[in-house]
Amino acid sequence: MNLGQLRFTKSVAEYQSFSRAAEHCHVTQPTLSNGIAQLEQELGGKLFERTTRSVKLTPFGQHLLSSIERALADVEEIRALAEVWRHPEHKLIRIGLSPIVDMHLLLDVLAPWQERHPDVEIFFKECFIDDLDERLGTGQLDLMLLPVREERLGQQRLELYSESLLYLPRHNGALDGTDKAVSISDIAEEVLILTMDGCGLRPVTKQLFEASGHTLKTYPGQATNYNAVEDWASLGIGGGILPRSKISAGSQQARPLLLESGEPAMVTLQLVWQANVTGSVHLDALIEYFKTQGRTLAAAVAA
Image (tube, rainbow, N blue to C red; front, side, top):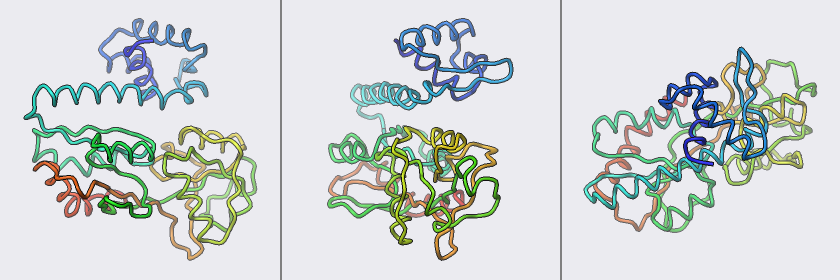
């Protein structure tokens, strides 16, 4: 197993095309295909289902993709830290992200600031929430973005944006086939597929049900990623709740989810940083941007 094979796999999963992935990786298609084949042989399973019309991850590939992405991110983090060590004048801001974060929205929000500060490199690190807290506390991260929770001692926070939650009905279930919005009461008897604890969505879902006075009924297994929630719902395993940004483009399954009041169910994301850490000038400037323009822009993009 080598980094090239992992990059090939990530690119094919992203572009859903061997030829486009090869072009992105600046290699020939046979080189990319051979690298993935060698990785599949080493791991003991097929990563992709390939036809004349489409390329998509197998369940085995979906199971491994998040770990592959984390491994590649770790390598980029090592390189960024080495650059800072060799060149102390290099300006770096490290932002940790819960998997629930809408990366497209975040990049849109950061774009105006980065245009004004082209000399500052922003490095993103996706982690489970416990890992984010540890990294922020030990100075391995400068900021983190995760769902709103109770305030923690020594941390400052800023609510950045809210995103609507959608319901994915279980295939052949009672709510399958409807195109109407559903409420928490409507899905109270449904078995729901939840993701792992660390991504941030599980406690949000539990809070929705607790606030409405209903008991959450969960599928015994856990999905390792958001694609799995959508796939399992389509297979009739259970229903699912996901942020709008995590629903596949063109999905016909997802339905708006409403609170008992009739208001849309939402997940709110907050920016968090250490209160007792004196930030650099560029870090202070970014936090101030988020407090003013960034927060307004995030709300507009999310809407």
